[in-house]
Length: 231
Figure (tube, rainbow, N blue to C red):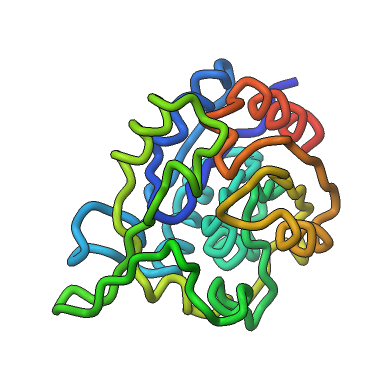
């Protein structure tokens, strides 16, 4: 029996190339990744959460056959927004992700206060945008140092508006979901992940930082293959 296709959605500041080590471990799987509009190297070109949701939906709709979507961190928000009614999506896997309900935003879900490691640049004609301070410590605490430094160097900017836009619908209410709690996460605290995980049908845990696709790609790939087979 062939496995469903896999769509990977990166988190804020991140790009598909951050997922290369995981993709390398998924040989034989039909893998697609989404470059989110809200993250990028040019602040003037950054999109928003709703555009991200449309890009995820466009990627899924272009696949002929069943799909599993794995969304990391912020990527869980546009995935939940964009996948309502996507008939070929068999499961959404939330990897240390914001599994929000309708009426919530990333910012509202963390108490309305930006994280201290968000470096916010005021609107200077391109829209307000953010950098991630101390990304190696925040995102890559258990990643091999050189890999972590390379990953940090590839990070883009993130549009600020993407963190405050309200999710208007929640695909996980009609599509089965799995939540992967990363138990040594410095970006999205594990206690918050446990609360989001209550919305998922299945919960698994990894003893990793926020970025197991860099620190434990083989283990994460095994988990993903299990999810594909179950779907």
